[in-house]
Image 1 (cartoon, rainbow, N blue to C red):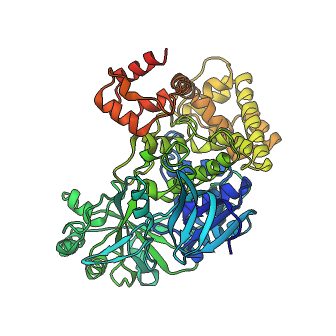
Image 2 (cartoon, rainbow, N blue to C red; image 1 turned 90 degrees about the vertical axis):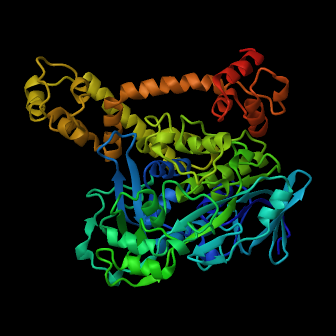
Length: 622
C-alpha cells in the first residue's frame, strides 16, 4: 500500500495538521496526512470562530504567507467583527463566527485539491526511528509508512481523558477515541512530557431559547474579510446574543462542586488561565454575581448553539439545571453537556525554532502538543513546521520569523526560550513590537517572504505591491498638497480642535488625533484624488495609519533594529556553557538545556540575567 517513502508525514488533521500538510505539499514535498477520522479534518473542537485579540493577527499572517486558514474562514463565515476599533490600530483584531460544518468541509475540499498530498485514515501508534533520525510511522493496523520527516500534530488526543462530573473516559474529543502509544515511546527516547487540561461548554438546541430576553450582538455594518485575496465579503450575517448568569445560577452550580473533577482532585493538570470554566470563575471571582454568556449559532442552517462562557466539567444534571436558570434559557434542551479533557503535551523547550525536535532529526511538533491553546496558534505552528520540514529536505536555510516580523515569531520564540507550564494563548501584550505587527499590514510584512518560499502566489504578490505603491503615493499626496484654512477650520471647529491660521501641507492636519480619513475626504482635493484612482478601503486605511502613527512606528522599528544586532551574534551548536564559570548556575543549566542559537534568544530565557549576557558577549569577542 505504501511502497514509496514520503518526504513528509503529518500526523493529525486538526488546524496544525491541515496547515502543515498544505504547506509541505504546496512547496513540492510528497506529503501524507494520517488522521484517525478523515471526516473531522479541520474540525472546530470548541468555539465555532476564528480570530480575536492577537489571534486575528495570526490568521492574517498565515494568509499573507500563503496558508489556508484565512481563506477557509472567509468561505465559511456567518459573522465578521473588527474588535478594539475604539483603540489604536495595533489593537484592532479581526474575528469571524464560522459555520462549523462548512469550515471543516472547506478544509477537506481545499486539501483534496492540493497537489502532492495523499490521505490515510488510521491511528499512528508510534514513530519509526533509525539512530537519531526519523524514519516513518507505524499505525494501529500494523502498517509501517516510511518518511524522511514527520510532523506530530496530535492536539488533545495523546492519552486524552474526558471528565464530566465523577465520570471519566478515554477520548481525544467527544465521540472520538484517544491516541495511545506515542507519549510512552517519546519519553523512552528521552523526551519530557506533561499533562494539560482544557474544556468546552455544552451545546444546546437553539429552538428552545428565548432570544427576546437576550442582547443582540450583530456583526460589523461593513464587514471585512481575513484573506488578502478577493474572497467574498459577507452580504448578510447571523446575530450572536449575550445574556448573563446570576446569583441563583451560581448557587445551583455550587451544588455540584463536590462532584466537580476540578475541585475533588480528579483533574491534576493545569487549564487555560484566560479561558476558565464557569465553576473556576465562580470560585475565583466569588464577589461577582454574574458573568457574561455569549450565545453563538453553529452555522447558517443548524439549530445547534454554542454557549460561550459556560465551559464546564460539572455533572450533566447540574449543567442542565443551572442553564435553565439563565435568562433566555428557561426551556433549554441540551444537545450535549460540556466536559473537560486532560491530555499529554511536550514542553516546547525541547524544540528548535524551526519546531524540529532537538533529540530526533526530522521530527517536528506543532499545535497543542507544544502546550498552546487555540486554533490560530496551532495553525501557525503547523504552517511553520510544514515549511521547515520541506526546507530541510531540500538542504535550504531554515525559516524562522523574528519577534519584530510577526506574532508567529513571538509565539514560537516564547515557546522555545521560555517554555510553558499552562496552555499558552497569544495576546497583543506579549509582543513588544505590536505597533509594527498590525493586522492591516501582515501582507506587507510577510507576503514577499511567502512568495520567495514558493507559498504565496504571484497574485498575492501583485496585490501586495499595488497596495504598497498606492498607499505610498497617497501619503506622498498628503505631504505635498496644501489645504485652504477656511475649509479645514470648518472641520476642526466641529471636532473642537484648534483652528489653523495659514495654509500648510495636509499631512499636518491629518496627523491630529481627532481627524480621520472621513474628515479628510470632505476636502475636494482628497475626494477627487480617491475617486480618480478608485482607491479601496485597504489602501486608504494603510495610508491613514502610516500618517497618524509614523512617529511610533519609526521608534519601534529603531528599537527592533537595535535588538536585531544581538540576533546576528550566533552561538555555536555545541557550545560548552559549563566552562564559563562567571555564568550563574541557573544560567548555565538553562542555556545548556535550551541551547539558544543567538545571543538575543539567550537574553529572553527566564533565569538568564543581563550580567550573564555580558559574560557571553565578552567571550564571543563583543
